Amino acid sequence: MKLGLLVILLHIIGGTLYQTISFRNYRDFLAEVYKQNFGFTDWEYINQITSFMSIHVNNQYFNINTFLMFTTLSIFIAIVIHLLKNNKSLGA
Image 1 (cartoon, rainbow, N blue to C red):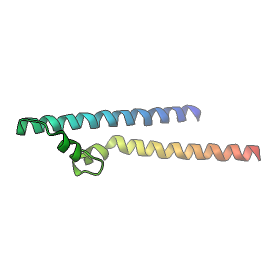
Image 2 (cartoon, helix red, strand yellow):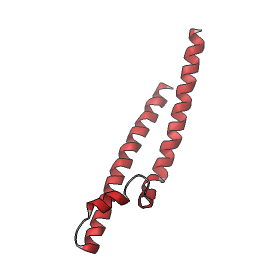
Image 3 (cartoon, rainbow, N blue to C red):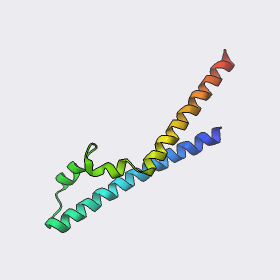
Image 4 (cartoon, helix red, strand yellow):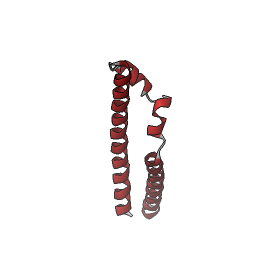
């Protein structure tokens, strides 16, 4: 079970790093497209449309990676709760 926890933690950490890198690449892609269309990059606009609650970044938040991270985190929490309950019952 401890190996499973380690694998789950590695998946969550790796998924978070992948998500961060993917988001930064997407922001750079948007900046490049903006530059091609207008001849310059308006970083204030790019940062505004890539803020947390913008429709322009939905594809970055809702994809298979985030689904798997959500599922893995749910399993992780269930295992931790199970381990905590077992430790309490052993000590009581």
